[in-house]
Length: 51
Image: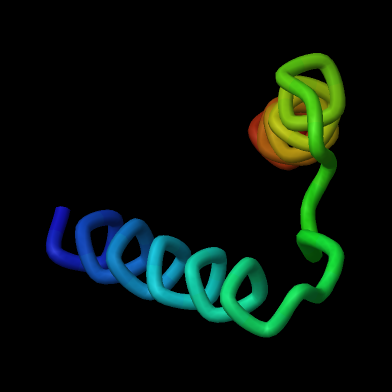
């Protein structure tokens, strides 16, 4: 759980830094894009469980 919290904190810091510098966000800018990334990750995990 500590890794999840640290990942969220570092993501917030990086997102704020990109916004402050006026750079485009290095992640999908919509919920649909984020869910696509989550789907890819879950598909990878599911296929590894079947092996």
